[in-house]
Image (cartoon, rainbow, N blue to C red; front, side, top):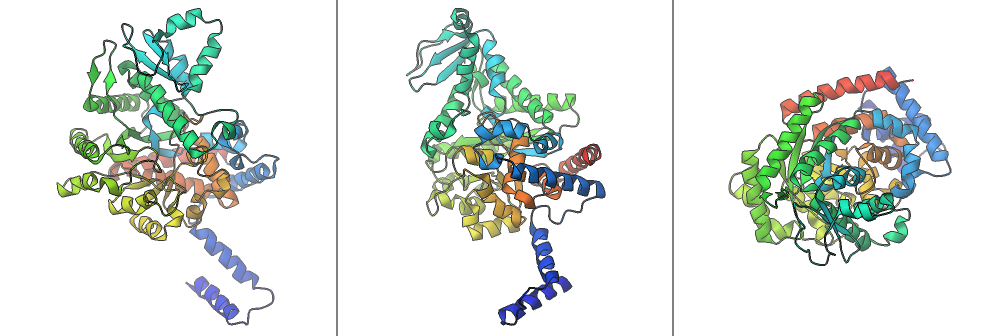
Length: 500
């Protein structure tokens, strides 16, 4: 309080026209300290070992900023090899990052695994679409023809007739990811990149929803997160109908139980992994009655699977999809029935200000969203920003996704930089890492720490972001305490092994 009074008295004198020619250095230093304390991690108490590592990180960051190419200022597809060689990235890979709270079901696992493992399994068919993409299907016999697709070919037979199998596999990989050497030419605008983005999910659908692959895929996804020192996942999942080799299918309840069984199996084999929960999603291109049916299904599933079912969300491109207010009757149903169904809405993933879609941020808060997915437009909405802060509604920041989908080109200009400077509730997430040519969470942490946070971000920033991922998760208070205690042990070990 005394420091604040000192600052205010000095500023009032300046405003009164009696400011000294050179401002008081003590006042300047006090202002800088006051401002630094407001940012993410600014009030985090650090040990001596943590301060040494923070100073080391600052030197490494200065070296990267002084280099001829600064990765956060470049498109991720071009920056990726530079990031992989970065000593900061290497440290972040070893750092316990807590949880991934925003990731999608069909982009959790590296596409190399899908092609080099899954498509080599027996009975895998492929067809080639008129939109220069592919579709896959496992079947005991040749599948029925699919509209706007070539005749089905058994991949085993196709590979047997192909001189260069590597080229064939690379072409299949190309259809499952946005990654390309020249992203600016390949994706000149948001419409182009979103069209291709949604096509990659359609290409993966027939592979991932085959029952044996579905379970293996989720296990592999957990394995990739665990390898990147992530200890918990909240997955946005469509809960698609899965199918067997004979064409028989399983419903949403089966799919959710499969997620639960695989998560339990993974925990039993990795006791320091806390598991996963599912946020059931449907596409925002549906109509009101379809979303109402989905909300009703979400309430049933939550009652059946309280351990793994976390809540509900709408997915798909906001700018071309229907707004949350359009679905108000469907989204109001749980409250009308006296049922608590947590919402985790995508909102503000747009750079169009003042549109109906731009109002999704306020509407998400009106519907008591637990977190805000992306929240890219939040800095344009001071009331929504203040409400989210007061309510402790964290923003799930996905740096690479926002850049690849053309909301921001230079991550130093990402609006989350403003949120970080104010200490707004934030978590760092990966969204669709496989589609972007990334994996785990370390790439997004790098972009957030080096690019968005700039020189202001320090070890306390990283520490608070990791803690936030547990604090703002949907885990019960008891499990949050357990998770934080486990994370702290991992963090202390990380500090002892990496502090200079």
